[in-house]
Each structure stands twice: as structure tokens, then as C-alpha cells.
Image (cartoon, rainbow, N blue to C red; front, top):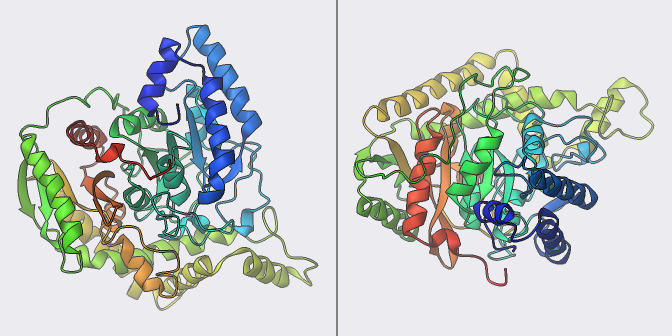
Length: 483
């Protein structure tokens, strides 16, 4: 049963092939047996999962089931979960038990899904390799000496290892799409404002967005049907009708125009990576899509703009982590200043401290206009590039990452080199656009992802394009050896 997709599990549960309790029990057993290799879970909620599975079976027997009722998933440990440890991968919150559910968690609970637990992540979602977690690095199931990507590395690894068929995740600068690509699964980042951020612990509030990690585009559509909702508790959540994202999956993509940004096919993108992406584009042409070269001229400014804006927002958001009301608190503080300094010094890891310092500097008197304001102006230029591009194309395609999964420790000594791993993903977050990664090939027996970028609130078209590609290819069915 562990090799089943969400769609297959949903159909099997409806047909009575097995119960939610049975598949939940099997997956919990796999987590116990196998996750020591991957370290994808921080907390396993076995008792709660079995209780939810039993309730789901009762709900189905009463005729009150939805498509996701009884389907096991897991949540990235950035979503507050009532009565459950919610750590954000940090020592700072290593003892924090959330007193409420994030809206995303509440939506899945209302749909009758089963949560197996909370998944590992880079500390406060700051990282591209899932090596900065207080709870230890996550390993890529394709090669346990390599990283799964970050920050949602636990979500990607758990899905790739068939420990869970789907997981929630978040994307601030590529943290869904990059780990999905490195782990050979499907990752969807919706339009900013499509999914409520209430109860999702903030890194950079104008960039963060919740999304999905699944094996297929069809599964992503099923999860997004549950996740997407208007939420008055989140002032950035858009009050807009949520369509049925599964309804258009089987539409033909003949005549769809795909834009290829010339800036994405750079000299430092290896020939093998370029070939895998171009082979995928050729497959779309076989399906009747048209391909057109486009330009996103301000792409080169995305990383410098992002690494001003995101740290600035993180320095403000993480100021609440002070050891006073919740989270880590130092022993025997001498006074309030000592409490703040030692609690934050002990509670935050190096990458978080680095970004707080950069952000505080960028927001400081005398530098705000030179750095933060200028970065926001550049952000508008990047957004305008996409707006202009979508006048001529339906979706944009290109690579997700410059390389396949790299080895643990390979980039930790040079933060800038690590930041460059997000070169192809960051611009979407600055613009607030939806994007997804789908498996499209392999290089050196490691997965490669194809990035698809959509116009605002056009997730249905992205999912349709991803699903049609997956009907024509089998890259999404490839799995790590031994899984």
C-alpha cells in the first residue's frame, strides 16, 4: 500500500479495498523502520493518527466522506498543530506545543485526513539543503550522503521514500520546488495569498506561501482543493473563489504556449541539466504545445533583492522569539537584557543569526533607502518582467536547480554558494506567482526537475500541464532503490 498515490488511496478507500486504519498502520510502521536513514520526521503522532484514521473510517461508513477522507499525510513542522510539538526545526521552539491549529492544518482535519506527524526542515525555513535543522540534517532517499534540498527537505524526503503519500510544505524562495526537484517528486507553490498563512510560523511575510509535496500533479490538485481557502484571520489571504483543481487535469494542452526564458539557460547550467529540461520541453511539443523564447531581463537581480528583503522581514518576525512568553529561555538570567541576549544566542543557529544580522543592518537608520527600499523597487521590475511575458505565453518553463542533489557539507562553508542554489526559483516569490516542479529526467542517477511557472491564480493550468506530462512520461514513477 505504501507505493500508492493519494488519488489511488482515495479510490481504494472508496471501494473498500482497505481501511484508513490499515494504511495508516502500515505507513507508521515504515516510518519506525526506515526514517532513521532519512531523519525526515521530527515528531511522529502515532496515537493521534490512529484515532483520526478510525474516525475517518467511521465517517466513510456513514456516507460523509470527501476525496481526502482517511488519506494519510504529514505536515511540515512550520504549521502550528494543536497539542503537538511545533519546532520550526529550531532549538528556540524545541519545547513549544502549539495551542491552536494553523488554518492549513484545520482544513485538512475538516476534510478527514490523517496526520502522521511533523516533518523536519531547515531552521525557521532558512536554508536550501535541510542541514540547518536543530534536529539534524535530512538525507536524500536517492543517496543518503546527499541533501534533499530545503527548507522543506523533510517533506520531500518523506514523500520520496514512500513514508507518506503527500505532505504540506512552504516556499519562501524555492523551498518547495527545489527539494521536490532534488528528490524526484512533484512540488506546488501556489500564488501568494491563495493559501492562508495563519498559524504558519513566519520567516518573510511577503514571500512565504504554503503548498504541497506529492508524487503526482493529480495528487497536488487534490491537496490544493483542501488547502486553498479564504481566511479572514490572514490579511494577505485573497478572497477569491477556489476552483476544483482536479476538474481540468485531463484537458488537452494542444495550442498552449510555453515560454522559455533565455536567462534561465545560463552557461553555469550544466549541459546534462540543460538537456534534461529541453527533452521535457520537446515532450510538450509532442503533446501539441508551442514553444517561444522570452526574456526576463531582471532575473540576475533576483538573488540580491531577495537576500535583502527576506532577511529584513525575518529580523522583524523573529524579534518575538525572546525567551519571555514561549520557547527557549536561558538559565538564571541576570536581567532583561541578559535574558534576551542569551536566550536568542542559545536558541538560534548560525544561519538564522546571519540572516537576522543582515536584515537588521538593511533596516537600520541610514541604510533603509539604500538597501531595503531599493530591493523593493527591483522587486517591482522583476514582477513587471513576468507580467509582460504572460501577455504572450500561457506558462513559463525552465530548470529548477543548477545541479542535481549535492553532497552534505558541500556548500556549508560558503553561504553565498548555497544561496545560488535558488537562482531559478527566487524570482517567483518576489513576484508572488505560482510555480511547480515535476520530475523530468536524471543526471548521474539523480532526479532533475522541470519548473513550470503560471500567471496569478492560474494553478489549474499548471496542474493540467504537469498532469499531461506525467501521463506521457514515467519520470514521476521512478523511485530510489530499496524504497
